[in-house]
Image (cartoon, rainbow over all chains, first blue to last red; front, side, top):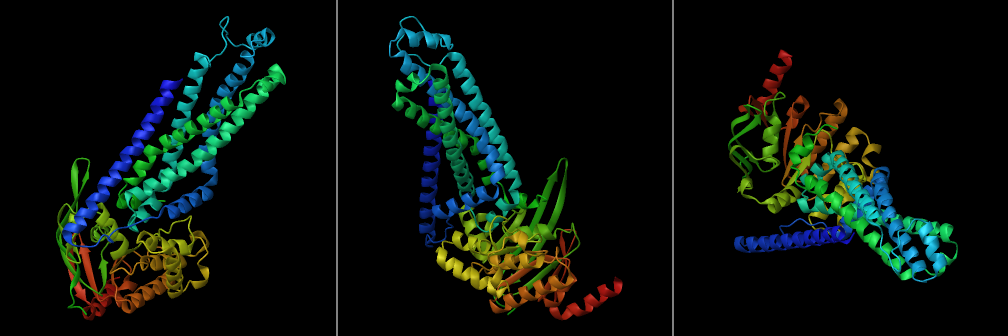
Length: 256
Length: 245
């Protein structure tokens, strides 16, 4: 399962670094440019971070139902991920007791155990299903966010006429997606973990909880949370770039 | 006032839109000089290139050839940051469809350009309330656009356009979506503001109510300037039109 996730994380980090470098270079350019012309640097438009946070929070609240749908797909995918991982954690806890009774219970529950194995990962099939569900989730988010952008053409055009830079629009969309991602992934990770723990309780009885490595469970939850946030940001990237690069005239021409 | 420096200068501007195989010439060489503090109307039938010219002056679109100067700066030379700054500080836009941001209250709509301009939040709120007071909506600052009538929304849009004390206000059919009396009120308001704050108002319109307040009227036909009339000449030609109609 790891290479795919690693790839996502690397991609994400690379994107952040790239955008950071881009802004840095651009800032430098403005400064030198204004120095050359002898004008002051105050010829800039700004959008303070707190203000952009406020605006994106507000637009999530106003379009709560739509953001709910985006968030929902994330909740489902992330909860499935954390369900699988926490389920494996619980099974691992039982396996490591080296108790034959538990071992047999695990085999009966459908885990493929090598003879003499003391730990196990999730099966290849499970991994594929998880990856597929995450992929479907990203496609869903891209779709929903593209709709959101289309819905807001006029709004984007208007704020550009008021002097917003491309980066403001980008930031608003990314912030929105970040918040949706955090909420969706948080709820998803929690739901998946609770479901997995209840599942192991029903299958193996209270002993399952006695031997669970809580640290491993916590790790799985954090992992699912991180993946959820990354997916949400990955999904909004293309729609947000489309929105940010739109010319105000085109945006205004849209009939509503 | 009319011999003060020119705030907008349009020279030899053409605009060609490419539609599949054939080109459509929206503007065929327009020269125009607009003086600071003037109230100018651009008149013409739909499809005459009026809105295209308007978009050029506002820096919303680039000409195919020719130049547009604002304050003697060629706006084709500006980069994205400077263009944004220009839109934010120098120009206030008013649209036919009001284009208020639906999710924000009247006050937030008015303060947004000031936030972009780097003004502190409290100062922006204070000024926003003042501006809403000026346009006669002092008690409605907490309303969202859909809770306001068309005329009230346009007033908010005017307050928003005035937010950063721009040198130019561009109004694209500001009365197009309003009834007769509301339209008149809006025109009155624009006129009053242009006199009080000595802002240059440029409006694209085909509303004849606009004529009586304009210092100059530019008639556009088929992508060219048909004629430019000073206020003194206007009453005659309006009579003529009324007669023709």
